[in-house]
Length: 342
Image 1 (cartoon, rainbow, N blue to C red):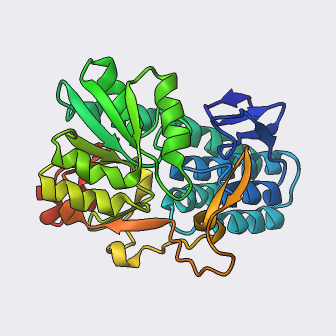
Image 2 (cartoon, helix red, strand yellow):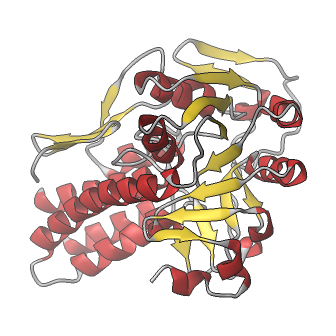
């Protein structure tokens, strides 16, 4: 496979490398991912994260394994093993469906390589299209609030919601970005803050619980988030805490936008109730871990509820910004969300 680089994924000398997103921002560490077991571990520990990037990393690894001579039956098993790593983010399933079709081709090795590289290039293009469409909704002087991480660390391109913010900032329309820390794993505090700093976009980091006060003070003009899955009716699953922001934005009359590629849409999923929600380890809530070590603050025997995602109903969303354009609430209410993607 030809070499390529994204912000957090690269192939050199036919070897897949991933940027450890658990080590950022204190350390920049690249890990090799030579086999399925390694990539599964990277995904489950969130060294690799972000719905688009998870799907891309799995696709690239399958292509590399095929080039290295892995038999078809073993590739089929590898594909299904990777599919099961994260149940909520549908980009992984969509990408692997395409890789499975390539695997069924008579010349499956070049077909897999071509499809994996095509997915990388498509994601870059999708991100750029999302950014362009979304920037038209950002008014001059905007103070925007975002949650989790939706930039180049999570995609092959400029990102989804952060891509929009970046594009709007280049147009001179962004005064400031409020960055939710995004408990419990602090993707906002660690990753989004780092990315915005690298892009020279002015931002301020806040605790998740501070968003309501900022909205009440008139300090937020719009909320921009990504999505890990969009149901057929427009409901979305995204990082836990997104639903809270949508409720707050609705109460305060603030636009709430979702930016995502069409690969995040799941036409077979009727609504948010049908989206599987990943439950994660109690240790993510009882303390904190990173390149600095581990600190636990909760009692040893504490009982924990730790869903990785929540569901925001379509009724709270002001617009879905996809690579195909902006889908309005009126279109969704008319029952044409899926048709609007075509």
